Image 1 (cartoon, rainbow, N blue to C red):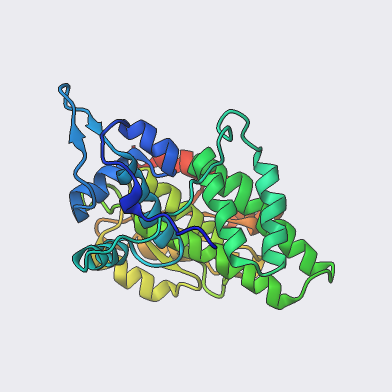
Image 2: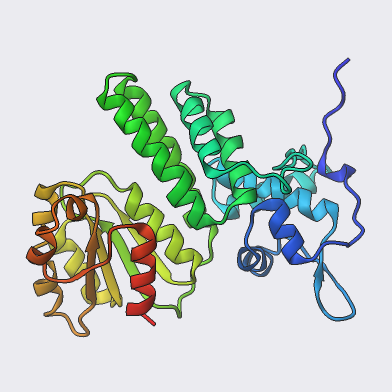
Length: 318
């Protein structure tokens, strides 16, 4: 006989974990936990005598379930609404298994472990296995490591495997779409601060490769910037007209090919006619492969890596 699945109701309600403990157990940053509590009334943690939040095992189980729903592609508001609907009928959802086996935090696998197994899962089109690997990685590493040392090398290796004829283009598309979906979910999970510096991010006209820009958007929103992600193939005239009314502090466009990079030649000149004029930043593989392109595009080259770009943007908008 199969054992009955454990539900969230099976977990005790006694408060015992600090917000830092919960962040380690769930892979959710404290700032995000507080935003979810404030905006969606997701949890009401116990307050200790010194006013620290204390969470129960049931609270942790709720957060794991909500995070799992967000990573599956639905918005945080929809996940909370789904949970409330279940609770209103007197039901609790099944608990999501712990992100890490016992002892995993003492002997964590390096990012290369997750890259290798994530590639294998995506090549086999095993979506559940790939999701579980990312959940485990999120429980161990910070978001910068996930983007730079797990997702990026995974995409590079899968792209090279396609170029070598080892996998189908269908598989390459599946992998890219899967990882892009995870990043979109992360972007939507972070709160938007209306009073923070306003950044628009997208790719150059005709540029369809946008995962690098999407990762940058996620990292900046994590850091508290007000980020609007515009996606691939952004038309310049429409962007300038949009910026005229929205007043971003900084607009960032990326390019992976020389052709799409050349499309950025006139962007800063057109933005300079706006009042106030937003700053213009650019980057991407095209500018790493052909350094001379950096001098041909008026604006701010943000660096060769995502880490460089994040650091440069903090300095620009400090």
